[in-house]
Amino acid sequence: MSKDQEGALFPIEDGNYKMDAEPVVRIGIVLEEDKKEELRFQVPSVGYLLEETGTDVLADSEVIVRCAGDKITLYDLDGGILSQDLKRVRIVPPAAARPEKAGDGVLVRGIVSGRGFHWSKEIDQTLSDVLEFLPRGNKLILVNEVPLETYLVGTITGEMSGECPIEFMKAQAVAARSWLLGQTKHPHPGEPFIWCNDDDCQRYQGTGGWSDRAVQAVSECRGEVLITESKRYCDARYSKNTGGISEDAGSVWGDPIEGLESRVDAPEGSEVQRFFPVTEENLEEYITGDWLKNTDAFASPNVVEEETITRYLGRVDEPDRYFRWTRKLTQNSLRRSLRQRGGLTDLEAVMELRPGKRGKSGRLEELHVSYRASSGEEKRHTIKREFNIRAAMDVTFLYSSAFLMRPKYGREGELEEVTLHGAGWGHGAGLCQIGALGRALKGQDYRTILMHYYSNVKLERIYD
Ligand SMILES: [Zn+2]
Image 1: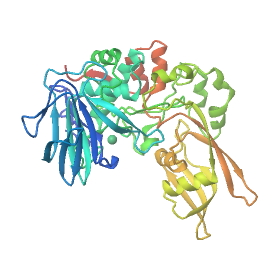
Image 2 (image 1 turned 60 degrees about the horizontal axis):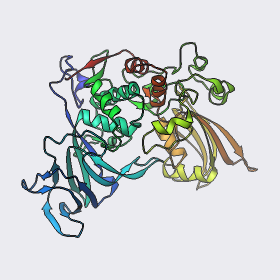
Image 3 (image 1 turned 60 degrees about the vertical axis):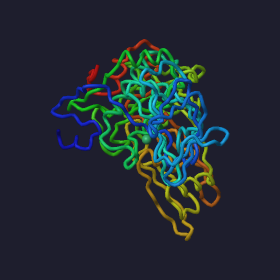
Image 4 (image 1 turned 30 degrees about the vertical axis):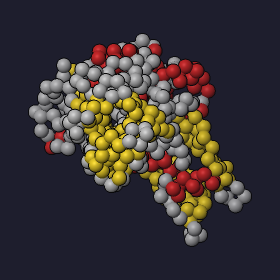
């Protein structure tokens, strides 16, 4: 094992990336931060064994889980106690009960999706395989233990819809599988699960959005993973919409990631090429120019029409214009977000916002803020990283940091408001979901799609 593989969740020894069998993964569904003292779930007619007692079977019933301290009690809907003083609750379906279609499994109510983002909401979800409830400081944690391939069907239909073209879904499944295996750091250290169900990991929503096509897509690429030149599982990150040019991983996260390099996401000879790389000089034309009307960029509304996009989006996504978007931010809203999420607690008034370094897709790596502090003093601060910029500028989170600013100043020279004209949704590195969808709609197969978004990788089946 090489040194930088030491922390890998799935370390590769001696360059051998094959696995003996499909792994089982533990996904956090309800986290401590969701602050749930009580959860409700509905068990289908197939009986689930309550593992802690070894004998109790739950079937065809609605159950309330409550925790107090480090103990869990299960109630029926009338308040009758089903089981109490449990340190954890694992409910396990019979081995033969494999999920096959939408809605198979246990229905859990009120699961948070989009934690901390502007699209955050609670939805009911059906989860297959093993459910594990754990108490922590009077809050419940719910973990779903599920075979990787089953998890992937729930991920590709959570990230996007089960109605997408099959070649898109296969590309998305391979990227999701590679990402999961390719993590070198525990995404949630100290937690009883490894990955969570949300956008900071991958959006997994159980079986609720399953379609025959999604099941078929995952089975047709079963066990297939992107392997990098140095024989690692590719950390195949992806985002919703690059805006036409994808970003270098190094620009987004500070350190490069093997296989994730900035690329133009358009056919050869496309006009998008002339904006590569996006700079302060060509930014305005790139984001607002007339050329956009007829652009052939795969992530553009000319390829994936806005009218049809809702069909292809995940259930919790907002249908909106994010290939190009506009957002007006007032002095008041900027003050609020820069204080709350930008860490500038002493900010009294924003005086000026200036762009700093940009990545090749036009995404800001740095944003300079000049402001008047509550002490009256004029201060300067630089926000670094696209994620922090998106969080700090807008309490509901900006779509991307690829934006230009048109400020309006008041009589005293203070900033009154700023209009942002932006491109894309998300960090922009790796696969572009809308661009990949556009490519699939244009007839590209999943291999071609993946080889565009990830450089110098090969596709390998690592288990049968
Ligand atoms: Zn996570």
